[in-house]
Length: 353
Image (cartoon, rainbow, N blue to C red; front, side, top):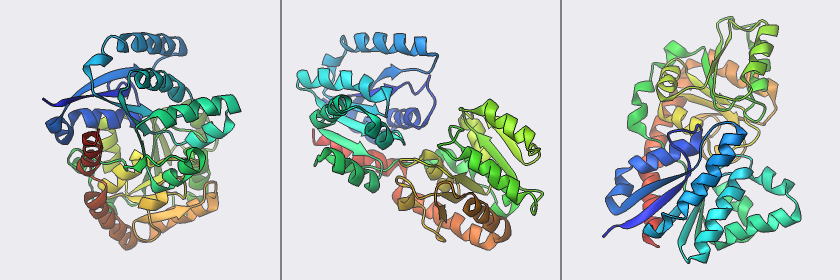
């Protein structure tokens, strides 16, 4: 009989964000389903604070009636409330001598941890220490977390991309040279405000430069700034983009631009690479491990607005360079960051249990 694995995390059907996407892809994976019997337990759904709280309580109570059916628990955990919610599951399961794998997401995890009181830091350390294995998204994260927790069971499994699903988003780079896309939660952490300033610089020389900003977050604040600066011809605020809208947007651009201040390994960058987009991003988290200067994109320092504008100008003026990086990105994803490779690594770790 196949071992039963329960995947615990935000709803892949009623939550937004990269973690929900990763969970949905795991549930649909042939690699994982061939060897294991998978179940999903939704520990979180999007909504107002009252709804989220009630659902989290209901979800944990429901979990107490189903956990006995499963052999392995693969728990997706991010920072802030996610850590303490998942801590309830981890502590309960360890008391029942169950096998636990923590899969860490959340770009601001280190910031979150460092801001905690000593008492809460001890609670977090306990959650990490009693897990059988901990998956992180990059080698840099592994080094950073080892310094804090001194655990030998931390392993790296990069996010993977479903290349087949994204093929429709590949387009002719030279036809979309002027168009850029920011895809993610709109706000300071993703560098959205820095991008507006960079577009303001660029439009003086490049009237046709176009930036699409897609995601949830501080949409109204950003719309107001764009209007006040008279940039509506150059910046389009799309709002939340579902999968079909994401494909449509990716087809319309040459470049993914993500000038973030904190990241793990963003799905946006990997999706951009898989669809042959040039990448402009920052040297945070696992990004420098996949985006190399002048090979498949340009890396800048967070907050370097002039550097951001210069990188975007390079895209606008050197199409042969952009096309070369585009080809390199498709090849790099196929070789190292495919969804299948990610799921094989997860499957192999489940087999060890």
